[in-house]
Image 1 (cartoon, rainbow, N blue to C red):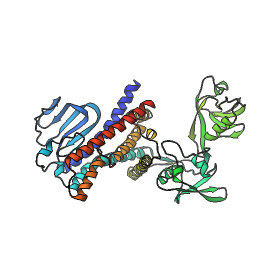
Image 2 (cartoon, helix red, strand yellow):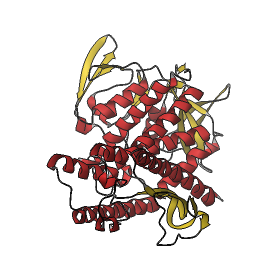
Image 3 (tube, rainbow, N blue to C red):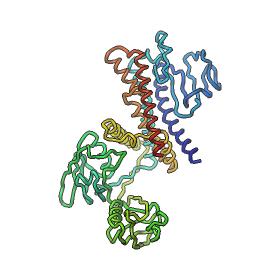
Image 4 (cartoon, rainbow, N blue to C red):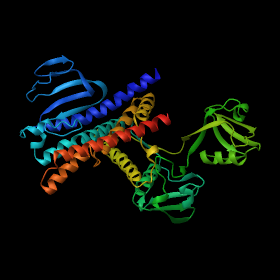
Amino acid sequence: MDIISTLFYFIITIGVLVLVHEFGHFLAAISCGMRAEVFAFGMGNRLCGWNKKTKFTFGKLPRDLDLEGDTDYRIAMFPIGGYVKILGMIDESMDTEFLKQEPQPWEFRSKPKWQRAIVLSAGVLMNLLLAVLIFWGIIYHQGKTIRPVTEIGYVVKESPANLAGLQKGDKILSINNQTITNWDEIELSIYTESVTKDLAIEIQRGEQRMTLPLHRSDVPDISEERFGILPSGLIVYVESVEQGKPAEKIGMQPGDTILAVNGIAVGMGSLQDEIHANAGKEVLLTWMRGTEKMDARVTPNAEGFIGIGLGTVYNGPTDHKKYSFFSALPAGIMELKTTSVLFLSNIYQLIVGKASLSKSVGGPVKIAQMAKRSADSGIINFFGFIALLSISLALLNILPFPALDGGHLVFLAYEAVFRREVPAKVKIVIQQTGFILLLVLLAFVLYNDVINF
């Protein structure tokens, strides 16, 4: 049943995103006076559909059927995504029969460049619009919670933050002269600013103000590891207890909140450091269970483990902002901007070789897993995941790569600059090459998904 539900959420997610994308192309084409021969949900052979001429029918349409400008709205065999076939356009179907005839006024190739550019960009714009609408709805429904803290609660040893000189208790005032007021701004600024610039982190340490420099190459890939700082106000709790391990023997249970080791207050990183530092030595562990304070002596094993899985919960100050129906819209647009910047920064890191392809790119299996996980955690999280994936689909499609919308726009730009069209044979070769490369990439990410399943 788990596999069935995972597959179900995958089909829903991909189906919605691709249909919205293709509907954008379809709507723009019709609005510009072009004809769309097919609008399909799913891929492969036609199962059933409707058009004005044959009405509702099952199976394939007759090959010699002339729809006379109407569209066949169909459901295809494989319920993954969809497509729209615009007359007079060389697309992924590689259909070139129309080139044997004179251009017709309703064909894509006959329209002005600006109209063709709108049609090519409309799918991307629809995906971005979908993301804005989802963010708008989520923010209006539940508002936004901000952690108004800039004080560092822990610095991971040997991390970029540690090597830059940041210390526990430092308050971050600005990054590259941009004033910092909350922890979310810290994380966003670090990963967006470091894409093209070195960092200048201004901090308050006691009574002293100082600026710590950090080269952009020293900031890790966001998909691979963290910068190495945690906010103050985090509480460490026990997520799981391994059977037969020291933690179980002293009675620790999931949900317990760990306070101190040998009387020294600990957080997420410092707890692990203290436990590892006392491998094979008895320590006094103090924790809370509800309102009851408990302690016991425990001896970590030779590797410095006591058999618990840890989690953190933020227990510091928060600001919860409610939004009206209309004020939630600009907040949704800002969420789109923030997510897009992070996504593009990751693409840039991939291009320059700073990010790992195997860790940054996910395929169908990973998407299915994340769709199922987000759906299990609630409808709001599921919609949020769809919004994030919709942005990813939009920005990937606009990249100037053959077989993508961006690749078609490159052809159009060439035509505008050199005042002549790219020969059809050249277009097909480039499109086929791009399609093959995309299939190779898909095979790689699918393999990567399977070995990391």
